[in-house]
Amino acid sequence: MGKVTWKPGTMVYPAPAVLVTCGSTPADWNMLTVAWTGTICTNPAMLYISVRPERHSYPLIMANMEFTVNLTTEAMARATDWAGVRSGKDYDKWKETGLTPEPGEMVKSPAIAESPLAIECRVKEVLHLGSHDMIMADVLCLRADDRYIDPSTGAFSLKDAGLMAYVHGGYYSLGELLGTFGFSVKKHR
Image (cartoon, rainbow, N blue to C red; front, side, top):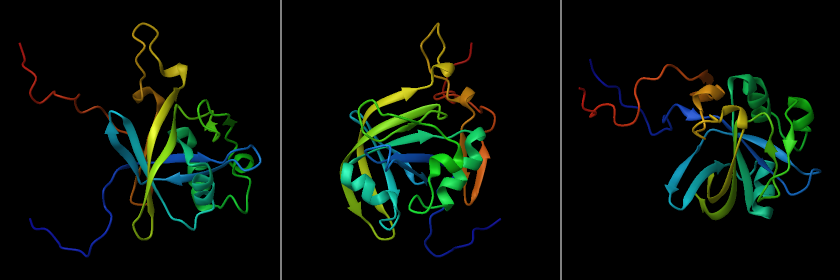
């Protein structure tokens, strides 16, 4: 068994398929699909999104210096894809996808009511990298759907939310649990 060498590319998959919402008023609220996103730091809580500057949402993010990352679910797959292949300059994505905007708590950008978790962010730094700009942001607050919170423990169950991932052009549901953090070194009695 061998390895084949290819030219440089981006093959870090699976990636979260998220909808990023932006804009400061209901008249300009928009959403875009982003698969290049992730955690930068836990304390302080920070994340990044990578966006092409020519995207319709890019100037909305830059004007307000804030956005909301909305996790997506299997039930949101069609709407997520549609929002990623159509431009907000040509369509009202809220109307076309049937998703529901909710005003932000700490930002002017909306959250998506159907999303199990919305992460409100304020832009900290922008790195101009080439095809995409990496937008690094401070996490201001998390807005969790209470349907997925265990009332006895207060824990949020992302597993029960039916999250989806993006893998090289395809949307996938998440599979079975293989283990929990530290299971490989846990002592068995």
